[in-house]
Length: 528
Image (tube, rainbow, N blue to C red):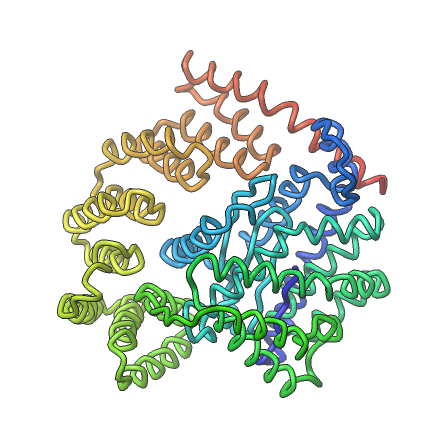
């Protein structure tokens, strides 16, 4: 919720009304979640028995509680229709983020956050960080990035906010009565994506004075995040000038749209002082040209299509790709062909999608510098699998997925596609065996559990289906739903000794967590 970038595009009154209604619903959810956080933080801090090291932020909000808070917010965000749940996009962002963090491991902090980077569907330039290492990017900001170094600079800046625990430090200065305004601030950031008017209303409804104090605090946090972000960018081998160029364009957009930007956004100014500070740091660095990866261009093409998948949106994207085809840069041409193939897939023109994808692949094969992308890019290979499944060429899709997974064994998106291809080919037993093996390695993957539940449903294994659903809910810390699924599983006719044993074990484990959830709900009702 820090590092907010100014809005440069506005939506219709209809879109504004839709977002106001949705955001009011989200406000209730987040305010409810955050109202009880003081008790959660206190209990978790006691349970950890952490030593006091003179950091007031540590005393107010433990790293564990901070992560829990972030997960609670993300549970709401993931249900938002504008959350981009796309394997290739998610993998690209997280791979880029991991590259930055691997070069600067101290940025994870002593709490060793497992960062998660994600995208939301909105043309407004914006990015934000939630507590505990969750960092979001608007599709508009990704498309506005003219180089991979520019996108990495924004990512580094947001990592800096998390690494410096700015949210915990904010709360330490405001005490727990700042939690409700903090919820309103988080919502205002989300509201600013599509509706400046909604953002103003939410901010005003969240105790404006407290919010203003929080934002005044964050001015120094912005400068601190700049410095941390610059160091991360430099250490990971990206062009530090990317931060200067991107911030410069944002500053220009602020001047152009200043009258329409909400006040709380203007209190995060992209000042000349901040840009000058980064420019001074760049001057001390030896210049080296950093080429952008082809994956960067492919991911941008994919984001452009996902940003607006309506009929008109696809037509607009096609015009943009047709114009991009005239570029002299080979990466632009390949990405444009990729984007046009993705559009054809969305329009159910599978033959055209296959033809365009093949053309893009041939262009890559002709270029010795770009050839390695064919074996290193899940963004590229995943589209081929998507098209094959759509064309009902299931055996081909399975072979392509197996080959890609062999080359990219850590790709979660390819794993999901592979299971999808197996299920489409009615190879349910093979899908079950594969999912079980994957869950040994990635037990905390809710998508795998949901896929396994789907497999069990096809097989008619009802008890196991509901156990898998319970596991998925538990991963998301939704203990009420998890316990409900266990109760359903227990009553199924095919729940034998093994299934009952699993249910009993999970029930003992989760009942404590469920009781804590009920206590929190009771506190909310009585206003504690």
